[in-house]
Length: 143
Image (cartoon, rainbow, N blue to C red; front, side, top):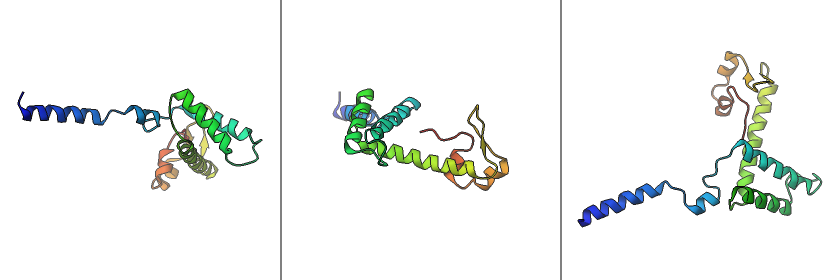
């Protein structure tokens, strides 16, 4: 094989590997996809960690945070830190706050069976510019 063909073959095989997650990135949560069950486990662990201090403080203690991280890592074979959770929890809090605001606005209701947001087309059109409101167009936030 000529050297140029070898180089081309080597370069194309390197490019193919670029998109594959490394073992480290897969374990540290870089490619972790949140599912309803993983969110449920996160919230359960958060509740257990808060309960360790009898719900006296807003966030878990360092011991509670360590408990959450160890249990989640064990469940999903990851190697992540509490910062990973904090980012997800903060995002969920933001979405929930906006969702609650939407529900308290005039003309908004949630179907108790389908959980879809029900509002008139004119209401949605008036709030079209807000990207987060647009994301809630029909369904409430989840994860």
